[in-house]
Image (cartoon, rainbow, N blue to C red; front, side, top):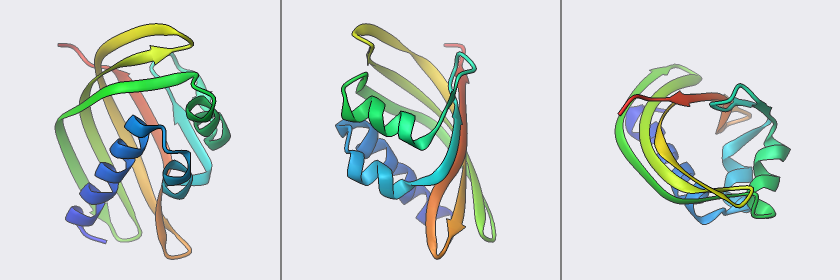
Amino acid sequence: MDEQGIRELEERLKKAMLASDVDALDALLADDLSFVDATGKVWTKADDLNGHRYGMQRIEKLDVEEQSVRVYGSFAVTVTRVALSGTFAGAPFAGSLRYTRTWGEISGTWRVVAAQCGLAPF
């Protein structure tokens, strides 16, 4: 996998998040995913999929403002700053976040194995 391939996977992930496409997310996330959100809560893959499946989280806007990609053989790290808005548990949210994702090749398929996000200053 090269940098362009990882950027394409990131774009597929973005589209899946915006559409709450659980099938696409299922294919892009590792089964043992650990995602630490901006509050410090750790989410599993099931947590993330269910958030989209049952409407707990809806992302209405997700604009990539900057992104770096580093590939290291069978894993890659992306650091992405986004402006996003939507609703969580019915409450609106909007802000700028920075995501760090680790992509790994698992049985020939690239998936997000770990991720963390935090608030980014405007």
